[in-house]
Image (cartoon, rainbow, N blue to C red; front, side, top):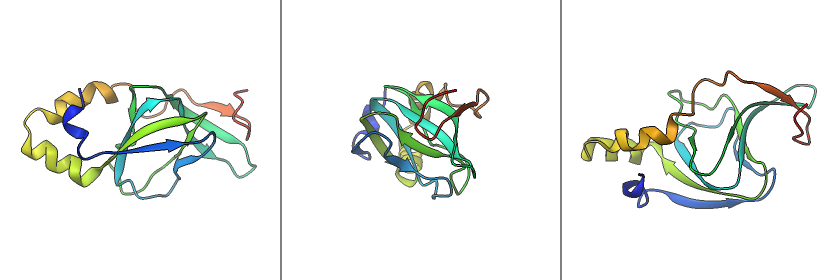
Length: 126
């Protein structure tokens, strides 16, 4: 499905609880989970995490239509993701008719996070 994007992406391996991106970081790329689990969350003032979403192998995330991230993304356990720069993705979409449509199924699960769950700082859902 995303074979055409392999040449613009870079592979990243992350350890448990390692940040992929932080709330407020530039939204200049998007990701596909190759293996493992990613949580999208917000760190609250009292130290707790508010978990907005989980992403699993095959899921894509992080293609917000804004300049900065509203949430942080973290590895729940060891995770491998592909990182795709937004600018290169937009160029590929213009060059290759249907590129955006081929990517769409990867994002169908990503909507505004509606099923929020509170989690402890250790990542345990309450």
